[in-house]
Image 1 (cartoon, rainbow, N blue to C red):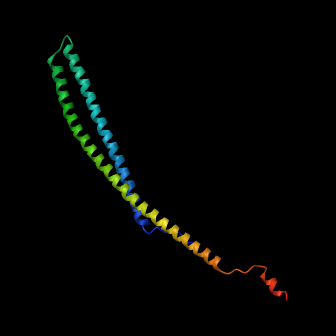
Image 2: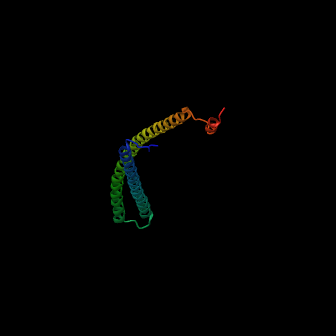
Amino acid sequence: MKAFHFTLQAVQTLRHRQQQQAIESYIHALMARQQAADRLEAIRDKIRVNHQEICRILTSAVATVAPIAQATQYESVLETKQTELAVALALAERRLQNAFQAMLSARRRSSMVAKLRDKQFALHNRAQWREEQKTLDDLAARRVTHPMAWKAQEIPS
């Protein structure tokens, strides 16, 4: 019996590597998106805390202009940072979508080669089966004499 040999084994290996790289890129993009979202949420928390601080200063009996001005400037800086991080998050989400599409494309290309391998393997199995059947048919077609036929010829009539 001949062993199965896939003619596009190198292509299958290449497609598998490309799929693994696409998965790794997707994972990195997913982690980058999560980090961007975490940074944005942290800035939003700081803004909430700053708002609470401004409200506390305004409701205190001795509210002076300096702490209010300082808190307002800090809020302005935080809002600028929030805008930057929102843009960074949108960019990370775009990169995540691109990485996802690349991963799906690599998976499709890899599965196409796998299907081709399966078809070639099935053809190989059918050819092997036909070869075995041909051998069995040849054996059955040969005239096999009965093992005791030699004794019948020795007895004189």
